[in-house]
Image 1 (cartoon, one colour):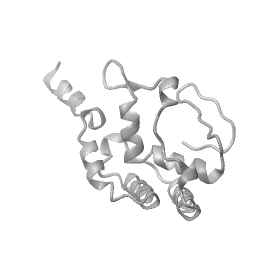
Image 2 (cartoon, one colour):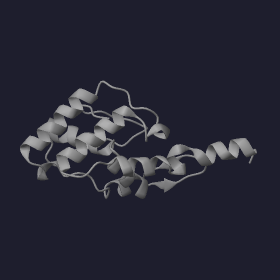
Image 3 (cartoon, one colour):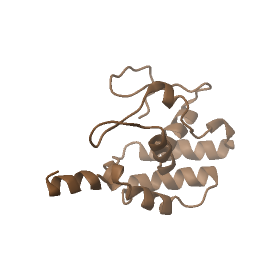
Image 4 (spheres, helix red, strand yellow):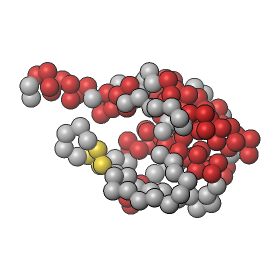
Length: 145
């Protein structure tokens, strides 16, 4: 989530960039909502009971993210425009990662700006991850475990 004024929350960790501009903040926000961003967060998650995960603030400080300062100015601008275009759209639930049209547009914008191939194969594989698809939860509900 991107907010352009100081905010507090009891549910998520607010983050500020070292060299913050609206374009850079929008680029990092897109990155964190992309398949690559989600994948990096999964590597740094803390297991909890049930289908939930947690994130500890010190661990999140080590989270690998896109360096918006390393992007060419036109690619950074492309990401900011993609953010502006997509920010009014609603992301589907994480369990629909593989087919969510907004998430697909985010991935396309991130891969184009970073000069990466399509993220579709990675997104498809990640969508099958039981933690995200909730497949293990559904199986337990069906089996009564």
